[in-house]
Length: 439
Image (cartoon, rainbow, N blue to C red; front, side, top):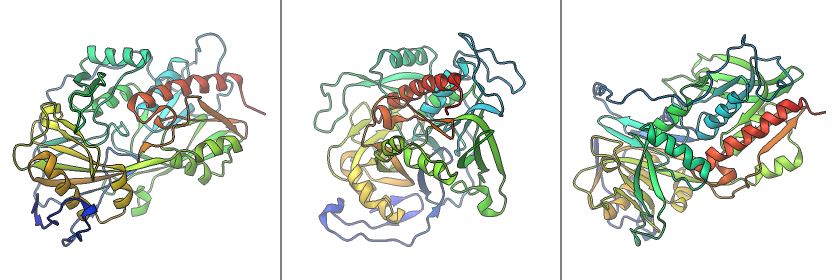
């Protein structure tokens, strides 16, 4: 039996789906609901008829801001280091960044330091992208990235700065593999304190970030880029508010746009606005592919058998990764995050969520050594890029207006790759703005 927080349902005795045993379905009482912290995903949570517990008082000191200038107001005179000013000043911002994850946040800081006015949009109700965390009841989970590494000098210096400010700490060294728990990779794995999302909150804290803002189209005009947005309804976070009749449609304008959402979504934004990229740029975007990831958030019913570090990576089967958040420090109550393998996630991405939850809970029983209560199932459609596009910054012009793309698809599917891509692309976009409109 797999125990859930509101009952139980029977699973096949042979947990792995590859056994061929039929899945036993239970009456579905799951509701479609997207995680407020997540981009690029769908998620379901087991409904809880009881009122939520009172919020736990925060014991965390206020997050210190990144060094750098405040976001300039629209009326501020713009002083650009190195002489000269960006060529066009017609709009509410010089640059609109779509996506408040690591790439978008660090890119925005680079552009601010160069003297540009920057607005960041994100459809989520918290910043972070894959640095997503959830508190459900007494348990706290990191839903996306479980750690980060720093292999380049620039990002290592950034992580060291975060560590000195108490934003990250070393979790463990080496590779948490099932068959090689003390593997040869000695790189330290860092975690946000207490959660990964705190890193994103720190990055975006000084920025002009518009959360709950769903970009629907990006259109080039004679006056600059128009970014069409709709406010998202908190009661229906998986869709724009207009879907329930309460839409707040607006058009924002900028001299340039930087798209840091997964590249298929970035292409959709441009297509919806009638934007046509140069053929070479379009070909590069089309080459981007991603693996999905199904993520189960659960509470162990007994002591678990994970290694002392509280993390385990598995090489085969339905489950690819398990984190014990009591050990990682994200949660003060028992909580585990179970990431499914790429193969299983491809096969089951559109399967009924209660079936997926049951199968993943059963598959995790062996390595965990205990049953779990299912709390929440999250679906990341664009979890891990599978075709790295290369580090060359991607800045192009449509109707003479600069448009740029950044994210981990360019420099590897890691937090560091997203950070590096955002910073490099921001520098290239700054240069394009100084050169003026392309003809």
